[in-house]
Figure 1 (cartoon, one colour):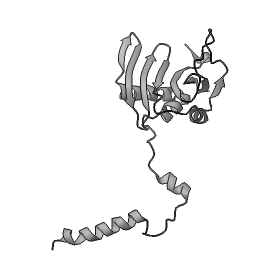
Figure 2 (tube, rainbow, N blue to C red):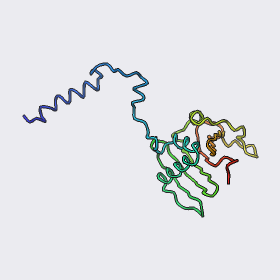
Figure 3 (tube, rainbow, N blue to C red):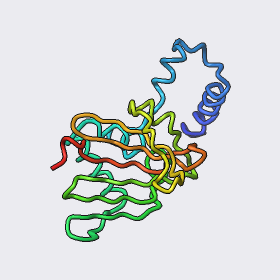
Figure 4 (cartoon, rainbow, N blue to C red):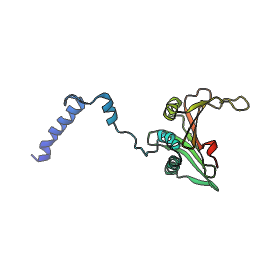
Length: 181
C-alpha cells in the first residue's frame, strides 16, 4: 500500500470532523469570527468603495476614475468626456449599468442596477448623507429621493427609485459647489 493510499482515510476523517465541528470548541468570540471572514480588499471595485472614495477628495476621485476605467474600459465620447456601458459586475456582486465622466467639470455619474438592490439606508449610514427635500421635478413628477454628502472638496449625490425609494439607482460625484472651477 502506497503512502498516499494510507493517508487518504486519515485526511477524509479529518475533513469530516472539521465539517461536523467536532474538532474542539472555538475560542473566538462571534465578533472575532466575523472579523476573520474574508472581506473585499480595500481597493476592490465595490459599491461601498464607490461611495467612500469620493468623500476623501481628489485622491479618492482618482480611485473612482481608475476603478471605472478598469470595469468598463471607458471610451471617449466627446472631447473631455468618457462613457462606459454596462452591465458590469463588481467584486461585491452589485451591477453597474453605466458610467459617464465629464473631465472639464469633474462630474462623474454612475448607474446602479436595481435588480441587486443597494439599500439607500445603508448608503446614507455609510456616507453620512442627508436627505435633499426636493424629490419632484418642476412638473411634480417624483424622480426618487436624493441624499447629499460632502467631504474634502467633493460632493456625492445618491439617487433612489421613484415612489418606493427602495434602491439606489445612481451616484453623482462632483466638486463641491464652492470648489467648482
